[in-house]
Image (cartoon, rainbow, N blue to C red):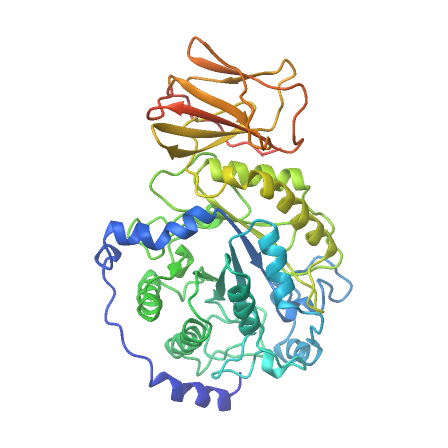
Amino acid sequence: MNRTSIRRWTCALALLAALGSPSLFAQLETRAAHDARLQWWRDARFGLFIHWGLYAVPAGEWNGKTNYGEWIRNNAHIPLPVYDKFLSQFNPVKFNADEWVRMAKAAGMKYIVITSKHHDGFALFNSQVSDFDVMATPFKRDILKELAEACRKAGGIRLCFYHSIMDWHHPDYLPRRDWETDRPAAGANFDRYIQYMKAQLKELITSYGPLGVLWFDGEWENTWTEAYGRDLYRYVRGLQPDIIINNRVGASRSGMEGFSQDKESAGDFGTPEQTIPATGVPGLDWETCMTMNDNWGYNSRDKAFKPVRTMLRMLADIASKGGNYLLNVGPTAEGVFPPESVERLREIGAWMAVNGESIYGTQSSPFKKLDWGRSTQKAIEGGARLYLHVFDWPADGRLVVPGIFNAPKKAYLLSDAKKSALSVARQEDSLIISLPAAAPDANDSVVVLDVAGKIDVAKQPVPDAALVR
């Protein structure tokens, strides 16, 4: 952005109303109102993350190295004038918002989080306060507007925006990269940058219809503080009171584990990245974001895609611990999902079409550890419904549900449209469910077990963290 552009958005800043000083977030709403605001997100359990921008043009390759992703400008030390040339090369003529939304919905995802602006500062929307946006490319179409319209047409899926606090392009953002000797910091004003960021956020929040989530990132540099985060949280909620905001709006996140160290920090949910907590976190909302391969942004050489089995078991594991799963796709510069991602979304969707009931609207497992898989649950009239996600089908046909004292009412395979009853017997403090010889699904077969009364299970030791197979 040049100084002329700064004058453009400075005029817009006069329209931004001051929200006052930060206060404790408990004062913003009652617990009941907080729970009501987050209910759709808690029920959704599964969303699509999309990292897309100018970094798709080099497709992970620079000066003979091929291991870059969305951080390519920083990691490959690309000077700003050179990086800006990608503007003239970004022309995703194969982009089809309706198709993207269709694939997400068919995969069983309930919301989409897309990068409105990543760390490189490039905006995927028509920003009135910046020249470094999609309208400066040959494409000249507002991608976020088209996605918003596609979500509204499709129904049943919410649009959400990722927005980077860090900005390697804006002249007022500090600190500079330590390798940028050609960009002196003299004259930069970080508070002026914050006003610019707020102006862009106002565009996003007021121009694309109701949003589900505003997903911040890039908050870890020492220029950003918890006070800034609290102010920004209040600002965004002031524009759209029902929006949900992640904890990266503040500055107290504990690394990739994703949880805030300050109990009064800004944000509505924790953000574990590329990791799943070993156990659930009672009383805290959280969402694991995960790549399908090794990069968030598109890398044409990166073929290390996770098997569908791994991703389905991660989904069950996360839901069993009371979390959400945000699974990433990095589209190409042409505007299409990589074929490996398309195929995995299709296969995940086939499983969700049969077993989605065991994910959506569920609560965390009452069991600390199940050797054969995971469990989710829902309340039903007169009792509870357990969804037993069986990863390792028992060779002897006996599924042992340990340490449960409730009386069984009925058990059946979720994939069985007739809900034919499975035999259930008690053996001391365990229930034994008799299963057919073959698993309905080699990745994750779901057994439904209805029990009477409030769930009553024996206390178990907390398990060590383990990789979901």
